[in-house]
Figure 1 (cartoon, helix red, strand yellow):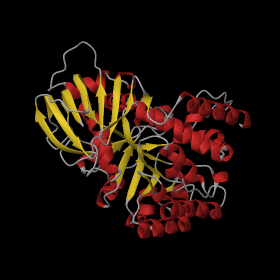
Figure 2 (cartoon, rainbow, N blue to C red; figure 1 turned 45 degrees about the vertical axis):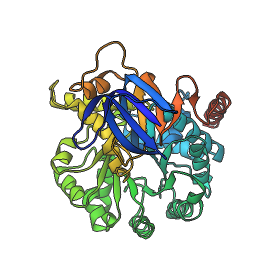
Figure 3 (cartoon, rainbow, N blue to C red; figure 1 turned 180 degrees about the vertical axis):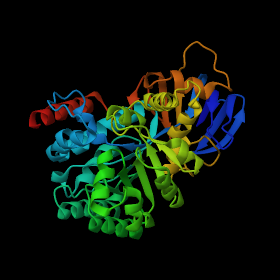
Figure 4 (cartoon, rainbow, N blue to C red; figure 1 turned 90 degrees about the vertical axis):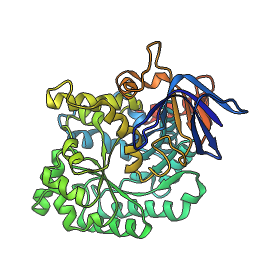
Length: 432
């Protein structure tokens, strides 16, 4: 496959932006990037477009899709109330069908929006065991690559938490090989919804299986307050004392992490999934990414299940960090694109394969129609972050194959599938 690009934003180590180039992909791998345009049997014509690496959503909840538009009566006035009054009710109501169709619908949306890889956290205690097979069935109907996990929680009981850990191990050891590019990992919902026994068990399993653990860390102050109450210290040192960081850890949010806690996270090579739009929506605060970057921490960006348009997620990051500094020049827009590509790929441990357009990496691309204005190399990343949207995506390419186009839609998904997603959502609303 040959892709001719008018403007190619590589996101390589030098963050090169090249004009009028072609990219050659063989067997799914980029084998050449050279000046000028070429023709071949299979050629993608993006000479009038901007080409990016495939976007990477490093923290999402696909099971949130059915709640969009739901006629919920809850009016939470805190993050904790939102968990109790909305999300934990949704968790309990989920069925296997919901798990599969929410994954299918979410993946179709992600592919349509230029996302080529994601990391998901599913929660539905009444779908155990087998929940992750249902999620993987939905994911694998689309061409996207993903990491999936069951979100372990002891909010009801310690035994239920162990069932969640068992589900992750069962998928990794028994089911994962049945799916292409849908891998399993481990997840603890939070420290405050688990016990030290559960933390220990999760770490043991993750280390044995050589898989990361994802955790919602200090998203809301409830996590901090409960940790001090239970362990006499804040969540990060408490987890450190438990040996949690013996495992590879992806920490989502870190909104209330102090500078000392960030130092501990950095010392343990913890990777951060930043979720700016979600943090705005839940009114929990703004993560101190500036201090994280001072400590050379790996940062990616996710939608936390709220907004499938990663361009809006990038813009949310730009807005909150400028507002935090009360300075319209207080945040480099290009940083948001870095987080959504190579940064998120590093968070997921996939940066050797995806996240930038370089020889040796997979042929994952997004092509954008940016309208009539000229696209200049020096300003192209800023133009994309400030002005692009999901609606501007003309193609999504994974492993050199065009898996989404305006003309053909998402490969493997038709209107009947999406109607089924909507019907399942309506039925879930009735149960709620």
